[in-house]
Image (tube, rainbow, N blue to C red; front, side, top):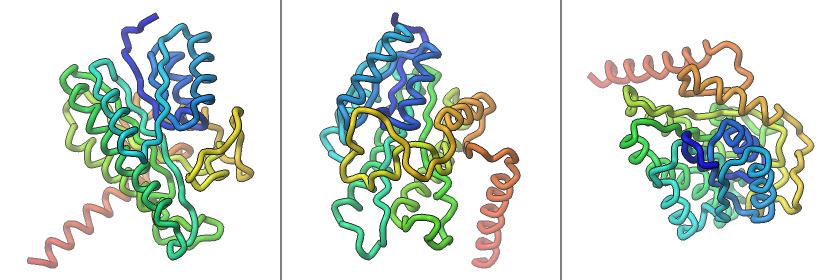
Length: 267
């Protein structure tokens, strides 16, 4: 059944937030394009979605740190049927910065920064032309933890930096596109009950079944609930579990105060 909603492209769809979000969107009637590195996981999810929702599901096996794979997915993201883009793919590369493998560092930057930017750039023009569309970029609450030392937080200089980029990029893009019909959100989950911490990202977690790292965290369905609710209310920054948005308001006020003071100081 081809739907009137259009097609949602979901990266990092083989597990965790990506898989849960894909299930929710398909349940709402979206056709889906599922993108991840693990073909078997994608095939299992695609079969489930086709059976349970009678929607069209396409899988794209891709490593978004590889230029050819990213270009292939970007071409699909630019399609005139893409009405929802979830940039969820991400890896952590945790570890002491001075010992971080250069190849892994490049991979973290490629997936967490370049792919998010390139796929958003691919999707937005067609969305604007059609007069509707949604982009959700998944960051992390670690984007707001810059000055905090590790232990119990991970050693995360590059990962935290990439997620800080996603927050700033998405907020700035949302401001640029204010007044258009597009919905732009940055989703900033905290510790979530996925398998994310079971791999640094060089290779995906093996096995056909999803698992959960020992650290536990918020159930993925609650993260998706928070994101969808924030889209309905027009919130650009969604922090699951944050009941009072006052800290985000104070953050914006502090940013304005810094810019204002800096301009006065330079005059």
